Length: 245
Length: 246
Image: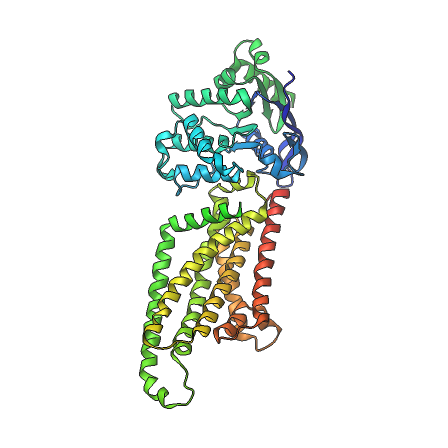
């Protein structure tokens, strides 16, 4: 593994209110061409962690570096390298798909000469070719999710962060999106959070598991598969995490 | 980047049916005022004509209409500004701007200018109506321009105030009500506080001069300060949010 590190986070901590710790001391590293799966029960701090990695939520302590730019120190340079699909896709429901995607491309500093090509590519990758003129609010949940993904990849970011990308999609769409994530993993780094263990098994090179805001497992998916199937491994790790606390 | 955000803001304000409804109502009320004023003026015109140096149609019709317009805009602008930031937070689209490589100042200026473009169109619609005075009489163009410029400056001031309160809040309604309350308070300040320092704080007091056709550099500087201070506070608030969370 000699690929360059595209994202590294050190000791991320975030409290909600004075006492409740959402995420505590999470460190992770991601290299180019890697797909990292983020697992954990509901409320384990997955979304909070992803928000901190992308600058949507400032950490109480800890640092994030993206493509060697410090997210707190050089936010504009660092953020230009990320594409983020939050848990709720940030869609302007009254805009047309094309207008919305062009707006997000401009926000991410895609040069105006390359806008049309970027739009075409993003739509093609997400299967939205037929939907450019539609108003986002009228699309079904699955298509809205695709627009959300298109928004995250339109500027060809070095790091793509996807919070539960396949939620609300039908099986055929899930298959397409997984193919897309694999394709993204060739050139970029991808982090995705999910509850679907077969998704992790199929897609991810490495896995980290969060519980109660702490990182309790980090390893390759092959390591997890070594002791049988993914589900058993996951339950074993998280349950021993509970008893160990 | 400022232009990109301003254009998007302008277009999405126009995409909302509520905007068209408000524009239509405003034009209707304005036209109503216009005819009422015109009627009053025509009734006394014969007597006025006998006076030396009688007040003309512009000061009798256009000036009071512009103060009515200023009051209407004061009540409307919070409904627009609440959408700019607070509603984006509630709709969870704010994260797009938060994670985009765009400095807070560009977001604030873009949103402010996008709204200002809409306000300029509203004011231009009313200006077109006032321009019909030219068909029947010789109007005082200078006074009219001072009035319209004054309305635009005042509207920009209220927009900056509303934008700041929108940045402070997650709830659009709270943003709108606090902006309305504050603008109303500033307006009352002008009515109640004699000639002292307090009156000078109110943007309406400075509009009054322009309303009379008095273009005073002190008033222009006041508006420039009022607007830049509030925009600066908004940028600060957004930067704080980025560093420490809301």
